[in-house]
Amino acid sequence: MLKIILIIVCVLVALFLLSLLVFFFNLDMKMAAKLGDLLAPHYDKVKRDRMV
Image (cartoon, rainbow, N blue to C red; front, side, top):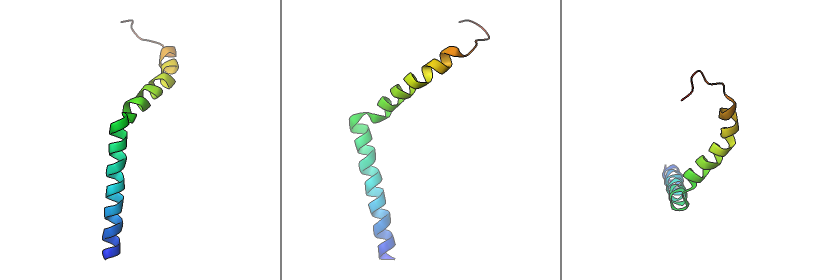
């Protein structure tokens, strides 16, 4: 029982540290920018129903 609790605590601490790392280096927005650059050619080719 104690071993299971220890494993759960270790996993939670690791996830918390990972979230701090993502927040500190702003990795979520860097990934979104790369994904936007990757998807832009696809959405540029999409035929529009109406022009804005």
